[in-house]
Image 1: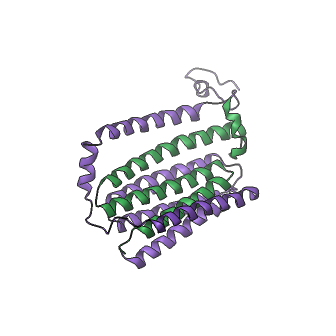
Image 2: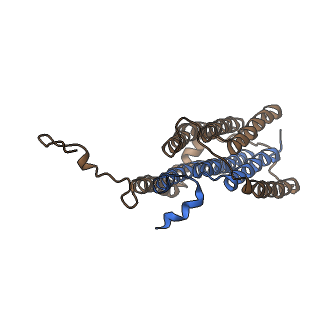
Image 3: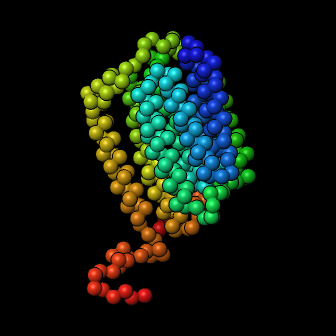
Length: 100
Length: 184
């Protein structure tokens, strides 16, 4: 396979699936999982371009992206636990009550 | 890259991603996410990025999935492992429409683009990545480590904060000191 287009299509499809999950889920952990899928699609893109350009920059960026994702998951799960403590439920519909 | 191998990996990725967003049980969703991330590591190996494949297995399938499972288990409402993860029916159709629209637009743009880079010229070695971290991207590297520290401290602070004393138990009074009487 000499064209990069199939890899880009694959990552686009993964990203679209992640968008669907973010928009349709009610559970906050479910939304975090879908965001993980989208981040994963982005990483595939970065690595694919790194491969086709023969340059290391794409992989360096992918490592940064992975580290940022981990930070995001940590903070997101802490917020989910806070949401659960205050509402006994992790559906995002009532999350605006966290403002106080 | 072998087209057949790529097809198999792509099919596995898309199928497991579908299961992630459509599953009714949240625990199963997390486990399917683990499958997706591990398959992505395989794809990274096929894209000649073994270092990133290792990082992916270590951080994602090792760390993030464990964290997610903890998050699921800590916030469950029911006994057993069945944790409801219903997507609301009123949102399912607009969500499917939006994601299909996004996919259509981006896929059309990819098909129309002609001047993609020509073929894989050479492999990137892990040594190059490491050198790049400690020379040209040193500042970003250090900022990232500070960000990770901040995220860790922030998560601890946020998760410890109780609201209106609902569940707050003073930590100190839980263990009676020696010689102190146990009061009910």
